[in-house]
Length: 381
Figure 1 (cartoon, rainbow, N blue to C red):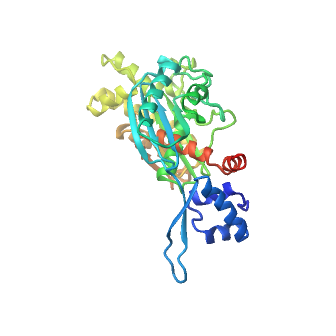
Figure 2: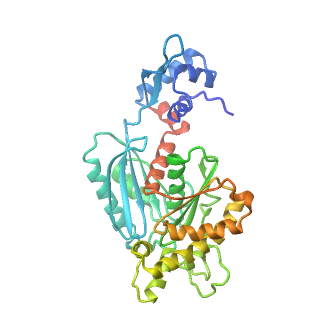
Figure 3: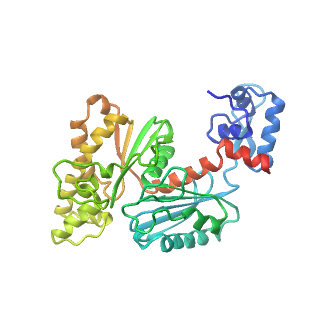
């Protein structure tokens, strides 16, 4: 374990709750009292650290508590889905200060979509009097790690390599970070509800299908951002199912909300998206319920392999089809196909709302206030 010595590393310990008093920081860091004081003074002068209140004492003088000043800046976060978008203005701990959402078609292209999101951001900022430290965007397509641009997205026409960071960065004067929605849903779920989990998987089933993996507390993206792209795993027995990626037999072509919407339309029940499928399921439409159970079983076939490889402690089903009929289908096949060792400690849950927005906020805060970035800002201030 690296001994924390820099000001940025000290802030990380305080921000994550690992050490919240000067005494605890002295113990964890091994620094001299004078060096620790100098570095904490730097953080306090920069407005990153506050000191106040007292820790319960078992004897002697109570220790004053150190805390990350989570109100000295705000984060702008947006979750873009195929037919809908949600944005939030939050403080640095993720508390929502303002919120907007509404219908927005990702297929309309980057400038109409990002322009609308920017309008929502500006309306929320009109009520805030603190600087923006960063912008986080969740998109329903693959994103190359470290790049704020979508690469070859199957369901985002016109977005390939569009400079999202330049478009929004110029308007808000802050760094812009972009990631795939499943990745950010997994990060949001981990930080909000399962921070102790060493391996967590979120599967988003909406118009498309994708998975986000958090392993050892970090999002696992693979070499070029392709980790978790389970929607394009081929299923046997569906040679006629053409996927939007151009291949045949992909899981997404058989079991996604888009695929089910097309099947319902063929049966005389016009449905345009995964959210439309969900509406029909909630209304008790028998054909939609049957298709949800069928789709859950197909996803369960793929997840049996994923669970056997990753061995997660938590598996969350999220998105438009995250409802009991679909999840029952997943469970039916998953527990039958996977080895008992892989599932004996597994929790299968239905995800809540706002996961991608929460993940986008966490992505921004953990990047902007990483030890290296904090140290860089302090040395150039």
